[in-house]
Image (cartoon, rainbow, N blue to C red; front, side, top):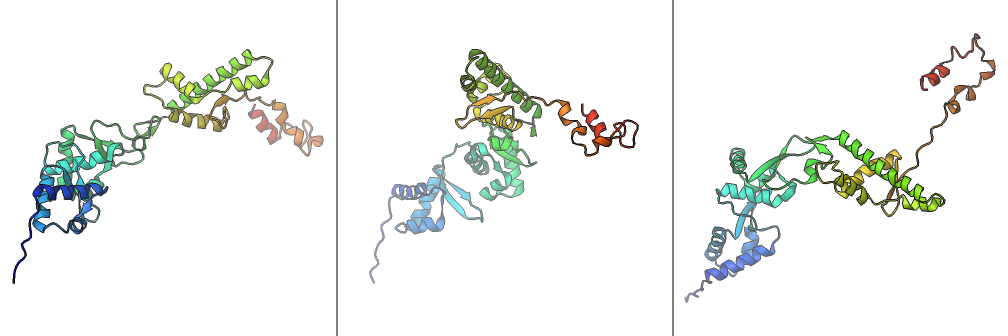
Length: 296
């Protein structure tokens, strides 16, 4: 029986074919799927192509949850370390500012706990990665050394050492309220005979307050408008600032304190006509009167 001779594909063409298929798979591709999509290649051709692409660092192998190995295009920086260091570095690099937990690194690399911790320590010593302790947890996550972590990890501007900085928040509320009050007073003084114009001129954009805080260097770090909006939300709930639909805010008119006489208990007491000094019902023994006097 005559045997049909199968011609081998040029190694460069085989690599290009494999690379194009892997590039089209955003989350990488496992070997079974790659084999099905490169059925025209002989097993040796496919394997040589994969080895060549891995050797040239164009592709990388990562372990997906469940232990399945997947080929992915290597878009990360080459650090010139061990294969374990490169694999871990690439996963941390992919996480960007969100960071990555040690469990995800273990699942993604297939390394045991001892290997993983040893490699992470080596990368930290080389100043390639750093650990961040996320707000609300004692666990550490890893990000690249030169990146600033996402606010979801640090808690943002209003957190210091994982604790909400109440003093800073109160300071910003006070500064924001004072600035809004000064604009309200200026609007009244500039339009003494037009209440509607006074009201309209007293509205300001939050950006103006953010610029004022930055100019006066109330904070050591930049304050974004998004951060300021959170502060203004608190002031709105407190009733010191009001916000309208277009986002502008204004200081609320000062609250008028009610006279203590309005709340005197005698005004609503059902036995007030029987109340006399020295009697069984008297101001001296009235617990409601005592509470009212204590509150003055």
